[in-house]
Every structure is written in C-alpha cells, then in structure tokens.
Length: 205
Ligand code: ADP
Ligand code: 5GP
Image (cartoon, rainbow, N blue to C red):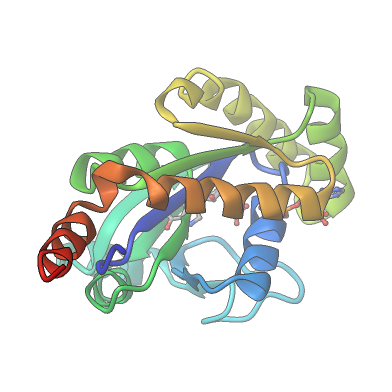
C-alpha cells in the first residue's frame, strides 16, 4: 500500500474538542502528531514540547525567517505554526502525521500538499460549543467571546474540507476520524504503485 506518509489536517472551532480527539486518536491508533510552535501562554498542565513549543514573539519570527515552519497563522491574539522538519521526516519515513491547526494554516497546507486529508471537527450545535469552551475554564470571557466570533468566521471555510465529523460521543468521534483516514488511504487513486507492483508479480502465473 502507500509508502509515503500522509498529512492529516484536523481543524475545528475552538472548544469543539479537537485536542481531546487528537490525543485519543494518537493513543489508540498509530499516528505521529506534529507539535506546533505558539506565542500563547501555556494553560495549567501544559508542558513545553508536549502540547506546544512555547515561544516569544521574537523566537517565533526567527523561526519564520529561517524557513523553519511549513505554515503559520495568527489566531485571535497569538501566532501558531507547524515546524517543518518533523513533518517532512514523517512523510519521508512513511508515517502518517496529524496537524491540528486552524483554517488559514490548513488552506496553506492543502495548497502545498494537495493529497492532505482535510477533516473538520465540530460540536452538534453552537450552544454545546459555547458550553465546552466555557467549561474548559482556560480562557477569560473576553477571549471566549473572540474565539466564538472566530468560529462564526471559520464556519464559511468549512466548505473547503472533505470530511466533517461531529464530536458528540468522544470514542465514536475518535473511531470515525480513524475510519475516514483509512477509507481515504484505501482509495484506488492513492494506491497506483501498489497496483502496478501486484500486476507485475502476477505476471509469473
Ligand atoms: P479544542 O482543542 O477544539 O479547543 P478541547 O479538546 O480543549 O477543544 O475540548 C474543549 C472542552 O470540551 C474540554 O474541556 C474537553 O474536555 C471537552 N470535550 C472534548 N470532547 C468532548 C466530548 N466528546 N464530550 C464532552 N466534552 C468534551
Ligand atoms: P489553542 O490556543 O486553543 O491551543 O489553539 C488555537 C487555534 O490554533 C486552534 O484552532 C488550533 O487548531 C490552532 N493551531 C494550533 N497549532 C497550530 C499551527 O501550528 N498552525 C496553525 N495555523 N494553527 C494552529
């Protein structure tokens, strides 16, 4: 089957549960997870190098200048970006790698890697989104309001994603995302080399 790793882009409204879903997906299934750089402050319990590489604005700009990021974007009041080397190494080594990133970065990735699998995670309705974002307790009311407004803006970009997955029951969502990825990888057009190889092998009969 496919030998190069695939990029799997997971986006969704803030508070939809992307981080929770991606964590579960990587624990249960064999995916590599790209750790982003960000200028936002760590939330309680977050560790540098585990959830994010936490950077100052100067350090982040330096990463951009040295071409160290394959994409970056400004989200609400901070910068976020995907380190280049880890992702390129995964692709080369045939490992599928998950990027949990917002919509502008996602569109940038799609233009560089047209075969990236684009998945959008959402809650079943807007009120559940607000409740989860508030319930997380990690942002001030002002930031929550900005993130909800951003969700409204992002809702017009959903059309650019190939798959929409509702995060209602967490385990169902994790398994559905995995199924979407498996289905995409089984597509005939993604297995041209394999088909060619098995055709050649069968010549011996
Ligand atoms: P995001 O990464 O999309 O901003 P998080 O993963 O931080 O969202 O989740 C936001 C909040 O919702 C967290 O408190 C998390 O525990 C909770 N959450 C995530 N998925 C579910 C779910 N399926 N059911 C109920 N609560 C959830
Ligand atoms: P949070 O502050 O909640 O961790 O993340 C805010 C938003 O930034 C989320 O939508 C998250 O997906 C996005 N994000 C995280 N890392 C990256 C990244 O490397 N690049 C881009 N473009 N967005 C990111």
